[in-house]
Image (cartoon, rainbow over all chains, first blue to last red; front, top):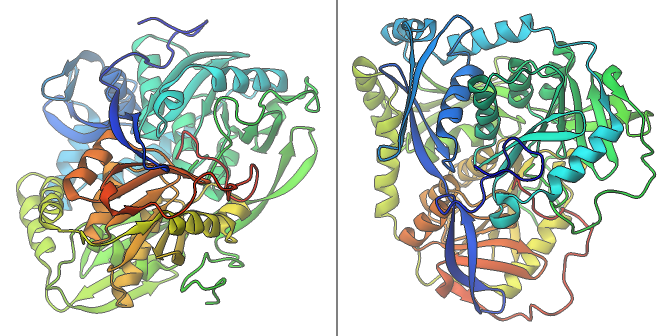
Length: 294
Length: 294
């Protein structure tokens, strides 16, 4: 896997499985050829139990599987992974642990009583959430923030090639390190979580960037990953803000050019750059301005 | 419920439950006050069975409940609604039918065997999808398309007020009729489906507009609703395109200003406007350009 300028993982370009060329018609009635993003099902098994089928572009299936299980609290700290097997033909990943996980036990119990275990599982996630203490000493400099958004927006990506895709980036100081994209916003986060776990990358000193909205789910996942700063070019939901304040997460949204709004954990922000200097984001360059969908 | 200029339903503005004022810090380190979108849980019951908890802004809970059940194929043509009860304090909606629905029966069976019935339900949806014949005689004029996108983009909305929200609009010729917004993209569609059902609005001659991406799910829902034209300012996924072609749905994406790309059902498009006339979408006006998240 080759990587763009300084990245550990940069967007998967040139993989013909991830985008498709299709022909259509434009506003003049002329034939056009364009690229569209692929979405395909990926069935996820934990040991012998089928957990979920995810719709994904399909790169990094092992990372997605492990990250999903981690972020759903279905894999705990005391679970030992023995194998992560991707079967390309079956569109399936099997994650194996040394012994049956706590989650499977809970799920089995629930199935015998009242159907899906989603209530229980969500309760577990909130327990972990409440117990997590994010590094109060971590800092985010505005000079890093401006450099990061500029670099991320100009990095060659599937978004720039085909659109209709979300991006998440794990960063450190002013450097983007791991840039994952997916049709499912949460898949992009989960792939990064899985990559960090499988490659033993610590969350210490890291900053998380997403193109998506700062919702409750996005805040919960960032806290699950133990990352103290979450940045987005998009907007906030009220519950996302509430949870970020509870968890003492630094929540920065609407980060476009040299502008942003922080609605939680502002004490980590160091204002070391002049926001009135020339903007890094000229109109029409790279990623577009945020929208309703963001 | 007052409505903006010609709409049957326009975005719910001025309802203090839907946005929240929060204070934070901007790029200069100055205190700012801003609006953020609310998301709250809504538990949905079909007769005595709890179906799902949806995260929603919370307007039109009855429409959301009924539309969700319709679009999930949990309510069929032969089911007779006897009541739709919204309990604001409990954040719950109960939908009651004359007799137990087919879906509940299937779900009960599934629960006794292998857990969640999602596989079965999805199979049902695809069966309906394959059986649906969308009106081959329906037309979409490019003059309507340009007028629609201009009107929708300049309609006062929660998006313009607080961002981080999706919009869907049911349209007829060049007129937007029902504009619903929600933090969940699919909730906005479902609220329109529910509204149409509860108010006996026919899909004949209608066009569906979404701010969100043209994914498989969005295409399936539009076909479920029997609407022959789907327009978005955002991009496509390959599976969305495939399904639209299968269903003979007219699929128009990246509709911004006077530009668009149609990737399915192009025979319904009538090119009666000059795309080179002055664009209806000057930079910075109304809704922003589409993004990764769209």
